Image 1 (tube, rainbow, N blue to C red):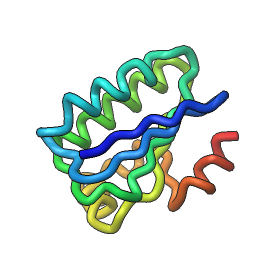
Image 2 (spheres, one colour; image 1 turned 120 degrees about the vertical axis):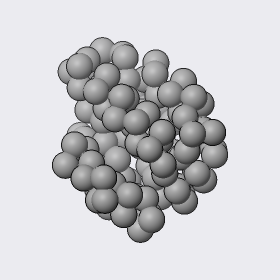
Image 3 (cartoon, rainbow, N blue to C red; image 1 turned 30 degrees about the vertical axis):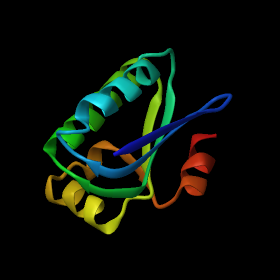
Length: 111
């Protein structure tokens, strides 16, 4: 699992690559924790290079979303691969997230 954080003026983009699973959950939680607890966080998670997600990964993303919304911000996902999207659909979590096909579209919606 690789996590890269790009901080911009009004937005933080988090790129995730590899498997978002129980082994990576603590690292993801740490990476997202400070970002989503800031005042009015605008967090965009790019999943275009994520190959897999399990329930631990879903839980971390749900918790980060909750923190961002609590702080008056937004937590947006983009670029889901087919396998990752299928897990979100099967667990019926799609309805809880703002999800866009690619980063450019997500950025446009966040501005």
